[in-house]
Length: 328
Image (tube, rainbow, N blue to C red):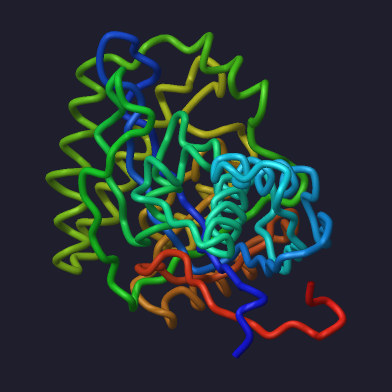
């Protein structure tokens, strides 16, 4: 097989909530999240005489790929042809920008014969993980991920615990069609005005994650996992009440959460800033029944429903042959 081309495929990230906000004298951020198989980021890369891009998010892709070249100390000497074959919708709570940057960075480095030492070096090459590092750790490893926070001398939050999520479990994704989550400069401005997370709330979140949610996933205890995950999401979401008006991004998201619960879904919450709502089912049949119930119980067609699985593997890399006309 020719080594001219490389396909990098990465899962999406769900973020269940931060432990705290920025703290110049102690740990900052930290939190809980997991990777799901879809929607995926899939990129095809190959060396080229000049920079070529096809697919969505071309500006972000170009910036990420060039940053990776610079990080590899080869600025100006390498160019790539890049096709973004699949990408999650932007600003929906999937960490799509981070996954695209990591996918491109990892692909470029590998084609250049360079490797990253760990999550810290990969995040630096991709210029990501300034707050949460869940997406970076998830890109590398998959699974359910727990980080306690970043110390002032650390560039990213180290991974505290990773556990496998039972393969039979399913995740329903309910995506309002007409809204985006907070992002970019607006997100940075929100963090500037948020009051600190009370210490007792952080301690409760740590207890729920380390003593309830992670052990429940290891044991395959679906009821325990989902009940404590909802409690975690509500407590973490309430830390944003001063800008959201409650634990969810807006009333529309709160209505979708209520509809999912009424249809029998468990472990329901908002990923990151939303607006995507996640919900868990114990297996494929239960997930399909919930989706059918959601469809039948409401005439509201302003949100899309999909079913995905946990991803316990992280990104995959595979070689692909290129047509001779594309080879450099």
